[in-house]
Image 1 (cartoon, helix red, strand yellow):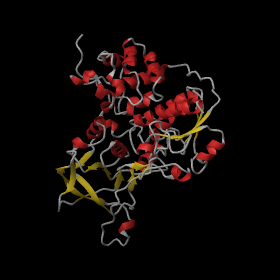
Image 2 (image 1 turned 60 degrees about the horizontal axis):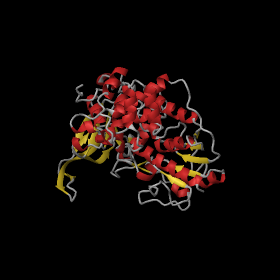
Image 3 (image 1 turned 60 degrees about the vertical axis):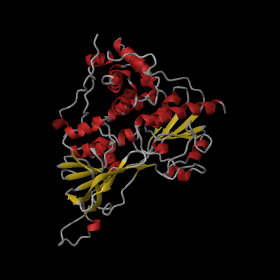
Image 4 (image 1 turned 90 degrees about the vertical axis):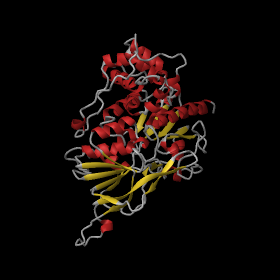
Length: 469
């Protein structure tokens, strides 16, 4: 049978319609679509796709189960390796990981591995009637700080081995960046809640509204009988450009903007935590978080949304799919531009202090790419005399985040680098015995799947540590 050279397209909402609602953009494969896409898999014996997966899912095996219409069997294969399959199928950058290693991709488009993973997880969630079997307790306790992807993965892997695992979450909802950072239209909260419930069924206890370093310290966790601690507290401290006007009303970090929309339900029509209704918005930078912020602003009834980015479209760090969706929805990309000042009240008759006023614009300068450096990369340089002003009512700074300094400031002997990231060895072990760390708290802002990989590595190391202690 001839192989279809292209992936089975993912059905989506109409771009105009979806730009004004928070329903999930990608609708998901039907059974027929999943079967058709699975048939494209060559079932390579050397499994190159597995090497591109940070959690090493046996991809050919789960796709083989799909070919047999054994969708629950496919889920069981995935769940041996991943605690968050429905999440990964939606937000992982498969195009630069497992799919980039796909043999079929040498000549044609690679197999839609992520789309198939999502189908399998959604099929299980819709049809499974039995809860996972809770493992026999092994008599040991482990504490996990943070309920993001690294923490949940570490907790899940340890729970499957019989550990009594308690996850401590600072916010009132479990899920970390999965619930406060990723918009509903990309990752519905119900999906995350379902994944967390599966971990609860395995015996994982989640305690919310507990700030480690304030409510409890890491040392107090050891005093309470926990034999090891995994720190997966993420990187929630926003960075700014330190340009004039960043203290104006209407300037947000992407972290705050998305958190208020997600956890505080700011997107609801009669929300008590409104961010904006109407007006023009500029989003600074071009990563995945910037795309999320831009598309969220559009759905909050922004009149116009700009992405301000200092390089070309081909150099945008965001996923290709997210950029395409943003373009389809009408986001305006201002490329080769860099902000130099955020402007406040510009009425000379207005006696209010412009430094403490409300945003009325963002001054930018045009950029061009300079000479290549030793790596061949051309850095953007300003074009003299090219300043211009975008009239906007709000600015969202999306230029990255750093780990929160609270934990490292309250744990004696915990080594961090100059950026505040926790230093660990290849097993996730920190400079303190019994304390492990992973995810964005170690690497700075990265992907969901890389954080999961770190949680998986640490779980194995914790098990070895406690069993050999």
